Image 1: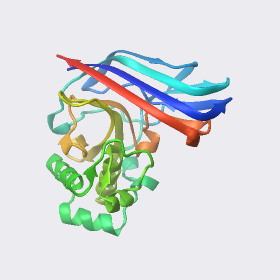
Image 2: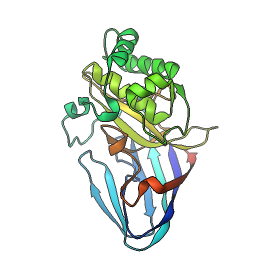
Image 3: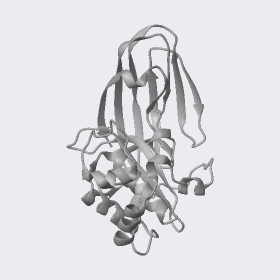
Image 4: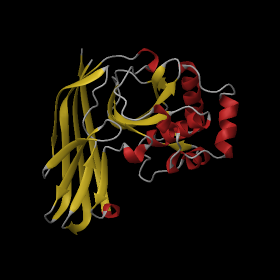
Length: 265
């Protein structure tokens, strides 16, 4: 399925700044099942491309002039094929898989999470159905509240709050899966199915010994497929976010994001 994607991000500062640096992860990954037919990123300044340790294409945007807002456009067409039970396929791995089994500050596992995991999946994570069952249990326990990602919560905070956005759902799944000793990684990208508005979205890839990477969307309790466009993967959202501020008074920002997707076969 071909997806025509238009993503516009607008940041506004509370007061003008003279200098800012941003890392952009806005280029679709080239995986076995997806590739960009055309893609362009438009920014108010020059951008320098590179590939990070996770294999993501990133751009660094640096502005050296006084500005009070930044508008970034990512536009193009991506061809995405369906995934059988979320199986992503082989990739050019730049890091050993076990790296994705190491917890981060946002995906630490506590006793409450361990108890939840033992109840939902007493035999651990071995098959795609095990991963989907855990995702459904998280979705039932933590109500999906789209747009509730302004302040990142840890996995333990998400479980205690009982509600969260896709970022929160995914961090909780990562904590659970890693508690079983199973590697898993965060995926950032776009989600769109007919009849629903497109959105920035987060989901997870889980490494299963006999299956490889299996991609699952906790917020919709389903395997990821041709409605999911992958931009970046990492150990958690902090290293996979579409835009990350490195300098420029990020705390004083307001943000508007618009994602539009049109599909055709």
